[in-house]
Amino acid sequence: MIYSQKFQKYLAGFSLSLVLVADLVITQKAPPAFAETVNSSIGSAVTFSCNDSEATIKAKNGPRVVNGTTSFYIGYQQVSSNNKNPVTIRFNNGIKAWCRTDYETTNDDGTGYGLYWNGGDVLYGVYSSTGSQPGNDFRRFATGRWLGSYGSGGGPKVAVIARINPANGQVSYATFLSAKKADNGQTNSLVVRTLSWNGTNLTVEAKSWWTPRKANTNSMTCSGPSPYIYTAVFTSDLTRVNSASAATCS
Image (cartoon, rainbow, N blue to C red; front, side, top):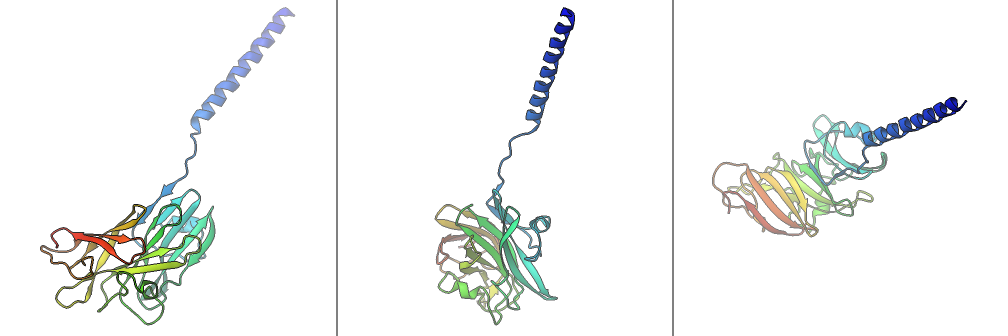
């Protein structure tokens, strides 16, 4: 009987040890979860609709910014065989909060291909434009800003930068950002590569074809072949460029 009691105690102690070891192994295999944060994303434009799920849009690997369980995506809708319109969407915990397809609804072949979000109230979108067409486009948001329209000509793809209200997707204001041909003043191509924010100013790095614009919007004088790596530092309200520079240009 004494032997049996000792043996039962031994088994009980051995079983407890196994449970503790198993708990330790499980704890070590389950690292703590960290919230994902992506402040800036510039990339190739992808197509999606306001009816798509977040999983469907995310799988396209287009531009997106994330803070915790909130995500923004940008892209375009193919509205006809030769016309795209930009689209921007927000999800909270995988549930659509808003989706905007009304920023540009003209025959301009526009897309969305970049975002910056500070995780709070500062959200910028980057869109493309290939010319001015009758109807609603970003010009109605760009009145009084650094560059109020696409300019003369049409065809070359330029950028539009828009300050967006993260809560509802409404554009607060926008500016066009383009190159300018020095010989005839017509608009030339510019593609944004990066966005950064220091709490006061928005810095835009882009590839600019002949020729980049000075802070006063006039053409720079450049040497060597384009495209040029161009940097413009905007005030937060996009009314002014504090500085503009490009290698081999002045």
